[in-house]
Image (cartoon, rainbow, N blue to C red; front, side):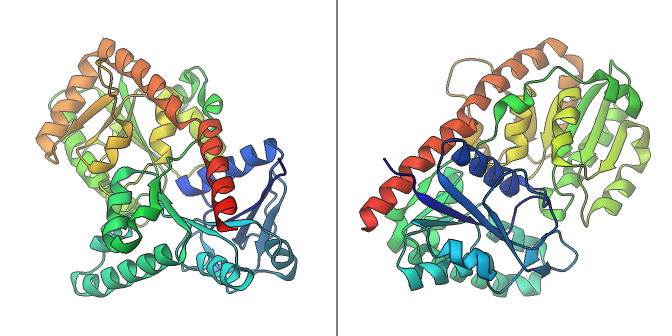
Length: 385
């Protein structure tokens, strides 16, 4: 069976640090390891040294103060490669996604669209007067992209339901394909030396968050609960890996318990595993996730989770009769603080939940996920012709 020529089009790719970037790069590397003719197309960072082959970086310029780069068209070299593809896989519905959509119309190739973000929830963080206009733009743009794609996927059932509500006439062409990571990269012993470097006592229960420090991540909710828990005697410490527009506000919020909080800021992705292994619990109070790679990475490290009830957590549900791999609470600071106190007081339960977390991570093995994608690519190309 001949190798398919597969092109992934993404605005999120190293050195951009986020879950989409991690998944796309790992998926690309796995495709190459299977001798597939896989390619990635992105904008900007022409001087970045890529670890893998077949990555085509076209000229791009900064999008505001963000890490993202945007552009209008592919370079001549990238375009020559793109013209030979059997299937195009767009991970964005804007910018480079529209480049992919233009190419499939021109070359009559199948287009797969993967939606990684609940943009409708992100809009709620903008001024109220702008929200109706932004919601219309998001809904119309994504709905149009769904209708113009041969297949649309999302990494969670909750996100698929949202996409189906935007384009009910194309609902039968929308399906779930979860994210995946290279699990063995996170199978390491705890890094206790890093704890000492950060001045965190060995006996203290360490909660960690990895991701953007922005309003939609709802970190203030965890900060408020942590303050309550510490003031009530919990021996807890919080490490926040990442930065963003809420960094200053978060630092001000945790000032009353600053000795119980470490804010290293953003770190290279290859160092995330080192921080995760030293922690006891992965904590996130976000409502706007889809299938976050940061949670998958924490599970792979054997870390239980603590969060708020939200539909996206369904992807991490354990259908066995074993103890769950974490705790979810209502969006109430006192209930969340009580969960923090409980986890600090019950080290044995932490260990049991960590073992369950490790087991749950297996469903997100990049080898399994890429095998699913290979079947999808083959099926789409064969049906298209």
